Image 1 (cartoon, helix red, strand yellow):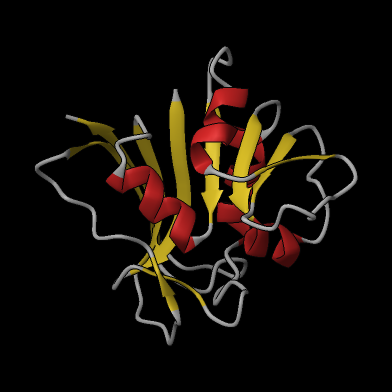
Image 2: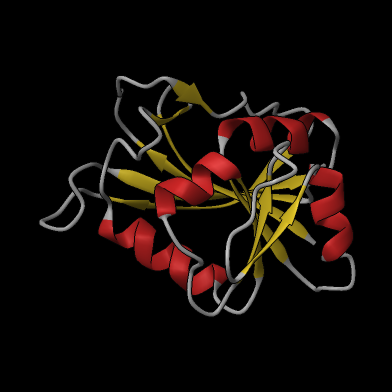
Length: 162
């Protein structure tokens, strides 16, 4: 199963200047919990914004740069090549960025969306593709109020390909 995992604003905002535009402690904890022990696929910019391979996960970086190499990571040159590396795994997560999300959705490469919806508007320069509800069916939603560790109201929402 290929799962796209992302945190997005009310208008599909993902980030700005190659960085997150909010800090939600609960989202970061959830990301760590659900992706630990699995492979994570990401674009080069996403990897460089993280800065290092994440513990207890196989990091697969997609880049067109044939000379690109990072210690402790697998580097491939297409999203399809990344997915070929994990075809025998039970679950793999695509963690960004915007171009990788767009390719995965447009090419029907993902089975599930695992979205943290941040209930606010943000100034962003990259966006998540619009979720087409004729293709993706919402299967679960947990709503949370802002608190001392989470500045905004947010929801954890799962979608399955219908």
